[in-house]
Length: 245
Image 1: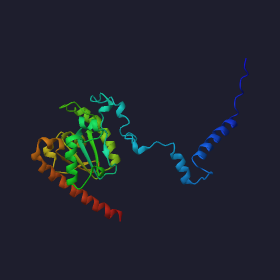
Image 2: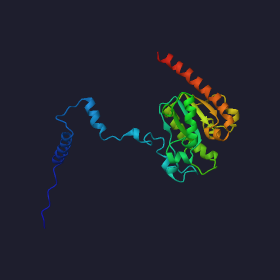
Image 3: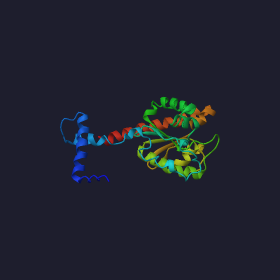
Image 4: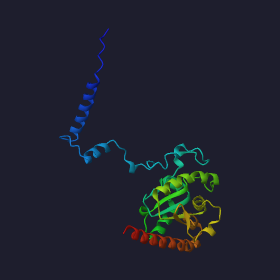
């Protein structure tokens, strides 16, 4: 019978761990132990995850994969997350994610995305300056509309997004977006052209890029709505400058 090796003394285990750690630091080029706040922060960050690379890191979408409250979710791959500047002054909320969005992995892709890009250029903006998302995050089969209960279920995630971004103005593109933000069944034709309130944020409902592709005559009406958005953002920017002084 072989002799059993004696258990290591706790102090020996501590020294082994410390020796291994010091060897690791030596291989990184450390010649001594400099313990300034900056150095300690740097060392601590080595084990931290790279947050900005993870779309789910903010916690907004972390529960989507487990979401069973909504009748729409059949596959987590159907989910299209919001995209853009998380400190944007303008947020764009569409209705339902499209197959093009699901394939590209971001909202407003394909033809509707191309038209949105042109709209933003006309507003002297780029996608990098705005935050873009949908009221309903799941991609649905063609011509299928979400139920009101599904829109209501998804609203909690939209609310978390907008609370984090805190835009000055929100463009609600289409009836579903307007229904979700304003919690109303009033037709879009009666809502558009006027600002509404959503938790202290200004909301302008208007027709969506998807609608404009099929109804080009509505482009002039949408542009009138968006000119109001531009003007409102200029006013709010001026007010904020005076407050900061």
